[in-house]
View (cartoon, rainbow, N blue to C red):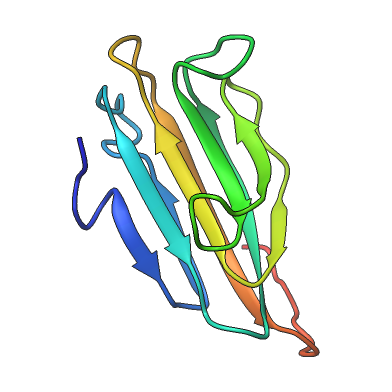
Length: 129
């Protein structure tokens, strides 16, 4: 299933938040979600995970999330994750594609992540709140 506006979104903003559908409640089964972050050439995108809990198996083939460097399904995969270990921050030079797939059982709370995009060559100062 696809949830338009929640689960199939293209972003072109400098910062933002992505959460699994229904987060922090259980995500639905049979999902195919795609989020694209693309501000055009000259931007690096950094993704930070704040919560992460997906159904786990050895090869992450039941419920999983991938992050790719690029904006197409065949873009290079940076990470494929499942389980409850918080993935590290991920940075791409240019567009980032995030894909989330679930099977038909054992739904969990899912994920919450944020991104920030910086123009290359710009100085940025991060402050913690």
